[in-house]
Image 1: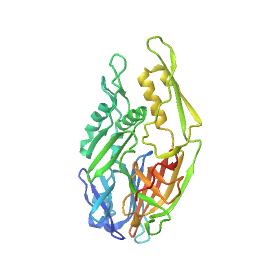
Image 2: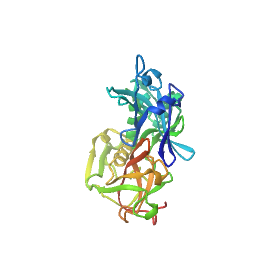
Image 3: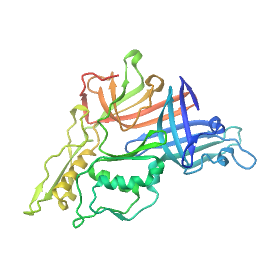
Image 4: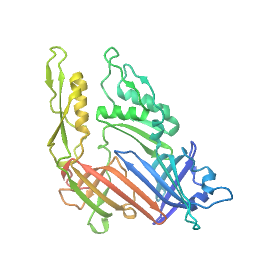
Length: 371
């Protein structure tokens, strides 16, 4: 599918298990695609098509390519290499018939393949296994969706006589709960066409930054808009106590660092609010420390940025859950950011990318932001 924007193309694959290129009639009916990659709420997509009615039904509905629970892969192509925006599952149809010729539309909505992990609740137990091993065992059940497990290691191995990790929810909610108690995140994102990484670990702040978002630098500029906000009340600290197992003395947990490393801001906003973690009183010292670290790691960032890219100048698909540099905004707000959310919108002739970034404070940690 051509967008008509300086050679940028939309690639759409559909199918039951192995997605294939969209049929020609569906490509001709394409009106709009929107893909949202959100580090907090998960990933989703929406496709809109114009409809023409056959003898008994609308052709696109009877063709089968857009049936619910079909797999849909949406990618953009800059040059020759496709950049997959989402590998998802169709979950919802919205039909809008019209008496006017060519005005009937079908809107297809879906979520990334993690929705397949959220269909059935289970009762299970995992004795004498660390959380990272449990995560791998759960994810291996979904190999048909091209999932490649990528769990970060955990060191806490529960002893069966003391406690046994139990699952009483869907696999998705179970993995998210395990991630939350370790201060981790869990998400599934495309690695290439048909292959997905199932990441379970700390926020990824160690990968190479994406090409920089540039403002006010002449021909190097690639932004349509950009704004910043700083919320001094957003960060919060965490305190708790644990019971020393030998003397049964209640002891405070010392301040512990966040898993969000390395820091992205030269001057991090201090935490003015404090959360009291009462659950640590019933935990051993290692569990209590993990609970405090998890709470500190999940606190909101003080600085956020929102804007829109000029896709043709940027020349890439900006990815959520990665680092990106900002240039041309002044020392306080230049530097590296974590990409929280990106919304890609494509229509014939246009491609826009709206984004949300965040970090813990102001001031760049880099002497210069690379392009």
